[in-house]
Length: 277
Image (cartoon, rainbow, N blue to C red; front, side, top):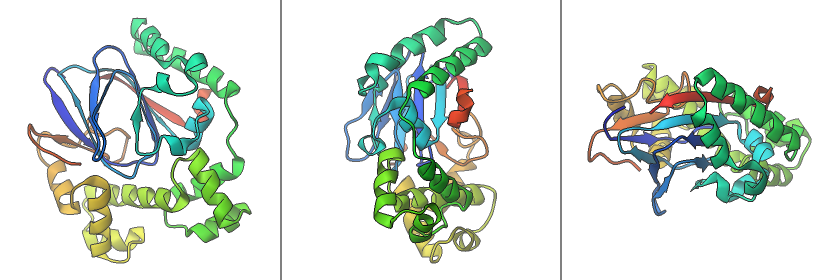
């Protein structure tokens, strides 16, 4: 990418770690001052963000299951929800040193070597990390499996906890309460269906929204645009399609025109992408 780019990022059921190699990215979110960072950690979110860079962006973006991020970094995830931070400013900084890892990755001669080093480092961090609750992992997996459709009370019964205890543990290890997490996963499924050509009424019914109006309201609240605006924008020449999307098979992002706005370590369940943005 040799020219400035702005991209609208919608909420996804993951935490994000960007290991930048050189140039910074500027991230704007409604109600917060913009952050300009080379390495970025973003916890789970229910609100959209706009990322911008000046024409060249290289690094590795790691998408983490939220409970895996809790183990890797040891920070209660509710402290990071709906936030963008320098990962070396987190309490783990003394023994994680994300900036140093990014520098070591940038110095390697191939992507194969970079991913091998990343696996090795994450495996060490994982072994030394704070164990996540198996019940939280199970509850999260059920929410993902059902696209956010499982009621919170039933979810609590499934793992043998009270609703209150489930909410507290979710906030600690996922970052969002189970109800908010379910909203994100429902919307993620709805975006995927809409991008595949399904109609709004059908999508609302399949994803468990009360009706089409409910889908539209949730979509607007969490992406900054209506379902129609989102699907129309993704059909434009500058939008959609990898590398626009952050997750394979998901409709996560919109590449914006100038002036547009919008609001194994593998056992840790993470995926990696690398290369210039």
